[in-house]
Image: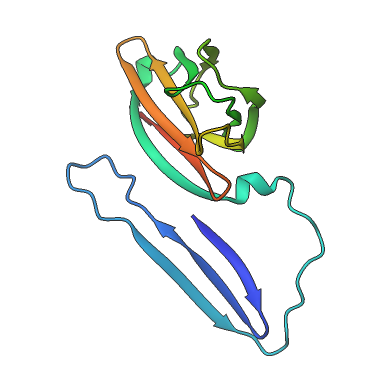
Length: 170
């Protein structure tokens, strides 16, 4: 994940590299930065981004491998994690809005997903809209496929979004 920024006579790309291979041995995550000097000063764009909340740092909190036989039957139940404190969050699937400013409570919000073979890595992003009375914004997800059940705690704040990645394996 990289972000491009300009400052005076240079362009900088900063971000994080993570190994998403399915092999037994994984490389550690690392910070990455690139810088290029340019001849004339770069003026910042006045265009506003579509959704500033999606530009927050992505904190990958879980990686789930899904077999191709399970890709069409994924149920997600979203609850508040622990004490119900009026957390409100939005949920995105690959930057497409699924839930908007949903109150997270003891009653589950149910979603059903289908993964695409053409896109083997799918990101489910929890974006905090508020932090409730006990920061950060937390959620508990029960993800059920045909063969397995996953229980995952996810948190988000105004600096980073909680991300669950689904890796579709053949």
